[in-house]
Structure formats: structure tokens, C-alpha cells
Image (cartoon, rainbow, N blue to C red):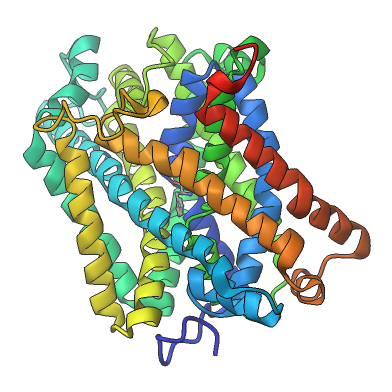
Length: 478
Ligand code: PHE
């Protein structure tokens, strides 16, 4: 009887590996391939990467374990599971407010996630068009973007942004596919999608990375990513790194609690959590090693922001033999990764709607997906019709952000860290110790370390990073 109570007849994951694939699918996504290189580029590379990795293993990994555990023990949606564990522990059910915030965060992330994933669909079509025209030209393995200068290629992103109809169309297509899969349920929808898409993703990733390692400025990229310049480590950069670690591991956004609620009691959670963290970090680093050699080889600005990946790689595809094929595969790769993540983003709020309002899964998926689509619409229009809108104009660090960046910023820098703080305090101080011990299955020494992290290290680190990240003026030296 695993799973959210509203889903009569669903048994949860059919095996441990089904869960592991789905959870890695949730973790590996645009966060790894688009957001990580963007942030590493904007924050000077090495130093950011070190803080990021520290956040993943010191705070992220124990939190992954905690969230999956809360789900499995609570057997409900994110809010319901925290309430159930609180009840079992004899403490206030109000802790579930953090679950509510996770659900809201997932909803907001989904809205802009779908817009960015739409860009990848657009580029798949661009590449397909190139393949067709190279066939017509009698050279099927030619480069992409034939006859275009570098400025014309990078300028394509601006053209896309200036075309609201195309942006909305792709966003709609992506959201519709996500809704369709989630509506099919845990077993027939989510699990099947992850089982097909994730293996394909890893094959493509390895192929493209090998290809990339032989072209481009690999050494320069390695030194950019792994040589820290600590003077670049501003409080805001550290806040970005923490937010990115949480985002990339799908923490603080209902996904892991909800997926955890479908996990069988026989599954060992600690090794599973470790696998998720390693796979996710590995893919992020590989993505960096795939993108930065090209960025440096063609002299692009690593701090270009959210357009980095979409501008830099096409330039490379224009120079490689067979570039339109490699390009198409690359954007299909991002699309697969994004899809398994958006599924998990939608599943969290959907499970809550099913539990809370007793809606049918199909209706819940349509409702949540539809609402997130509306918010996404605003994000898409924020690049053209609404490009003057600055939703958080009153808040220094977000004052210049457009609609999409504002939602990305407020979820990543504020909501996810707050949820992480709540979950770590809850597990570290309030949850029943025997329950935690039994569910995590950790040995005595590791259990002590885990408790120390949840009770002290994670909350303090998160608090410090967030406070100084959001209000850098509080630091005497900055
Ligand atoms: N982890 C996903 C990524 O890196 C995004 C995500 C965030 C998915 C939160 C689920 C929940 O792209």
C-alpha cells in the first residue's frame, strides 16, 4: 500500500532500480546541463564549483536521504508525509508547512522549467531542418548552420526570444507531454518514461562528451572549472552554489519526498541516496566539460548567463563535421533529461492535489499542469511583450531580473534553502530517533554524523549562506 492515499490501485515502484532511475531522472536535468554551467560561468568557475560540491555532499546528500525517508515513512504527499512523521514522533503537525512550501516551489519551478525545456525542443527542430537541407545539398554529414556567421548563430537565441508564439508553442508542447506522462501514473507513466529516457540519456552523454573532448579548448575548460579563485567567492555566489546544489538534487521541492512515498520497505535508502548524489554531480561536471571547451575555443563569454548553453554549443556544431547530427542528438539529450525532471516537478503537487482534494490523477495533472502553464506563459512573454516587467524590482539582488529569472531566483535562493532548513531542523531535532534509525538503516557511527549534520551543520550553513547571500550588506567587509 505504498504511495499517496488518493491513488487507489497503485503499488508504487515495481523495483528498486525503477526508483533509482526515476530519482536520478528527477535529479539530472536542466539543472545539470543548463543551470550549472550558467552559474559556474557567471561566478568565476573553480571557487563556485568547490562550494557547490561541498554543498552537495555535506548538506545535499544527507537531505536526500532525509526527504526520501520522510516520504517512505509518511506514505503521502510532501505535506502529508511530514505531518505523518511528525505525528509518529509526537510533535506538532505544523512542520508540514515546510512540505507545503516544497509543493509551491515545485509548482513555480515547473512553470519556468517548461519554458526553458521548450527552447531545447525548438533547437531540435532547427537541427532537423539543417539535416534536411544538408541532405538536399548532397552532403548529409555537413556542419550545422551552413553559411551563417558566428554572430548570426548566437543571434538565433535573440530571434527566438523575440518570437512569443514559438516560445509559447514549445512551452505548451513540453508541458503537455509532462502532463500526459504523469497522468498515466507512477507505474505506467513515470517509471516507464524514466526507464526509457535515462539509459538513452547516458548513452548520448558519453558519446557527445567523447566527441567534445577531442575538439575545443579542453585544458582551458578544466582549469576554469577546477582552479579556484577565492576572491570571486562572494556571499551571493555561495548562495547561488547552495541553491544550485539543492535545485540539482531536486531537494526542497516535494519531488524526493513524493518519490520516496512509493519506495518499498525493503529498499536500503542510504546507498540509494549516495547513488543519486554521485550521478547528479557527475553529470553536472561532465556537462561543464562538454560546454566550456567550446565556449573558450570560440571566444564566447563564460558569464553570458542563461543563454550560454544555447548560444555556445550551436557555434561548435557549425564547425564540426556532422554538426547538425551531433547538435540534434545534444538537444534531444537535454530534452530527455528535462522531461524526467519535469515529471518529478509535476508529480509532487499532483500527489498533493490527489490526496487533499481527492481528485482523479488525470484531473489533478491537468489542473496543476494547466496552472503552471499559465505562469510559464508569463515567463515566456517576459522575453518580449513583458520584457520591461521586473516582478521583484523592490528587492536589491532581484531588482534587475526578468520574470523567468525572478521565479528562478526566488525559488533557488529563498524557497529551496528555507525548505532545506525546515527539513534538517525537523529531522535533527524533532523526528523520533528510533524512526530515523530504523528508516535510514545507518550504522552507529554514520548515524551520529548524519544527526550532527541535520541538527547543526546543515541548518547553520544554510542559514548563514542564505542570510548573507540575500543581504550581502550585513557583512562588515563586503
Ligand atoms: N533537479 C532538476 C534539475 O536539475 C530540477 C528539479 C528541481 C526537479 C526540483 C525536481 C525538483 O534539472
